[in-house]
Image (cartoon, rainbow, N blue to C red; front, side, top):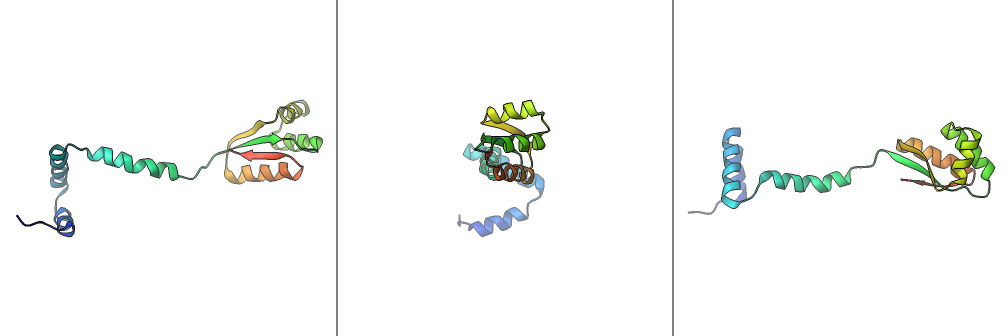
Length: 122
């Protein structure tokens, strides 16, 4: 029997109907003891890890030297009262906002860093 090139095999597969293609896949699975579904899942695994993160948490890492300004900024950002905002700043590291968009998280980070706080986006 003459050996077919990969190109010739691909051309032959292109001519198959969906039912014939399904039968071919089933026959290959039985012949070689593999599953086409397992190959698809392996290929999808790394692709899922490459997806860009869309939700961020803003964590106040350190209040810095200007604690009062940081408390005011935290109140403005979170809508907390004075006591709650002070507790949040005193309790650093503390997550201030969870699951927000990248742009909003970066704006909050910039505002807090402007008054001397250290912030981490997670």
